[in-house]
Amino acid sequence: MVKPLVFQVSGFQNSGKTTLILDLIKRLSYMNIKTATIKHHGHGGQPDLPLKKDSGRHVAAGAAASLVEGEGRILLQAEKDDWTLEEKISLMSFFKPDLILIEGYKYENYPKAVLIRGEEDLKLLEELQQIEVVLCRDSDLTEKLQSWQEQPVFFADDEQGCMWIVEYLKGKWKDCEQNDFS
Image (cartoon, rainbow, N blue to C red):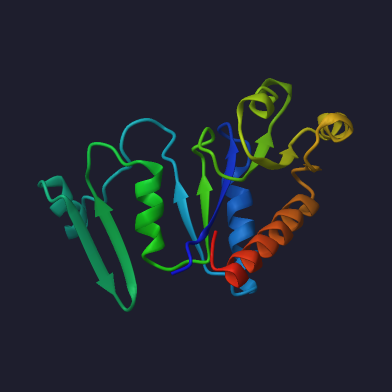
């Protein structure tokens, strides 16, 4: 079985990660690239359980996991002291996606796009590994970064950055498909 390609979208809160992920999913889906996502709940604590639904009540009562299915859609909730990113990737791999997009987990070591809000975020460019592309929310800073950053740099509000990522992922996906590795 071919392991899915993994790509991260990283940046601080309110940098545009979710907006970029949604745009990537739409574009990749249009090209029939099956995409799964993993999102870090960066607001502290556990994500809310839908306690008005039986599956949420099952978990709240102590079930280790609860799965509900209807007309081909599955919702899975599971409890464990700690989940590694590798465990989450393995879980998502069961669904046989071509690509897993990871929102957050900025310090993990996968190829990534980094979103920069302003100069206060520049430390990410030194701290993070496997940066493939930078998207900057500040147009003046974008121009500065383009002159000294070795990776491609795009203004985040311009679709060129998203298109660059799509082409990058498409190329990596085809390499994985042809060579049977990721």
